[in-house]
Image (cartoon, rainbow, N blue to C red; front, side, top):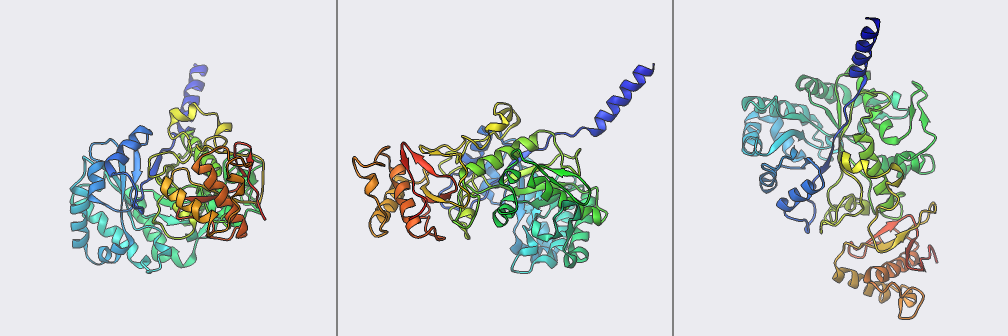
Length: 465
């Protein structure tokens, strides 16, 4: 009898202490002029085993393409609509009718992101956020959709006053009463998660002298002990998420969950964007997928799974800002993988953790694994069209003044005799000649910066002139 009681007690403890695995979805942004059709995108997602997607609007063609696909979709109300949504519920009634009810349930809309990173919107839309969310909820309720469709609003980590150590996490004082508390009240009321955009890349790139790259990429490292609560962190992602949990806990919202609405690592960047590159991007996203699907919570919330949406599905050539902004994609617009990582639980089982980020970059050139801290090189993007690569090569070797002698027939870097290899050498020669200045590794979007020396055959690329 005592044995049976112990067994039951053990099962009970196991039930309440175990955590289900989180889920992995992807952000489907469309700021590009060369993307596949939405119908092809749906097929691509299916082929990769991805069953959750997040959009940045409610485009009719896209929502129709997702109809009867089995893929759950998070849609968005853009920031520019928040003032109208806050002022008049008839506006949100029409918006829900035209953009949600029209497609649901054939298109499995599971959530609405009301705005995106509103607190840093230069148009000062913060004051409209909670009234807009309340009106959207009321409109969903009118259509009997409020129990099936959650509402939230993605926040950036800049909403935190303090984030290190994680236990000291707190929201900016000026946001707490006007918007954070009312929003968290609404999320609690509806059982919706707080959406958080978390990018360890930004923290690492700005503090590479203080933050270990292995810590940022989920690789083996000594870890960091939180001085406030003694918890040990083995990766920066968990620390960032727990800082938000701590900030909510400080306001007595322990019961609100978190969905990571954006996270990712760029496969290319400007010379001052330390850490950008395909190998690091493969390591971060690959190891993140493993961590999310491995039934692990965070140190502060060990039994609470984390759902994430990777940013992003494609490289987007019309995004503004630094080079990295155009290079967060898992895929080129051609649907070729930028690097190869597992995206499903089955895929994770077949790839050892030590392999993620080591040999996943599909290119004809090899990337060395020796550390070359602070050095950068410029290489051609193998997913670019031949015409664009040739134009870039012609410019670099001509007007650009690159040293293209080594890629002439019979010279040391002529082999392999491929356009990508020759363009990479020429681009890098130009880039190094220009002292690796920002903007000198672009060539019409056909080049990107890497932090490991590229090798094509026996050709070695110089790192400076």
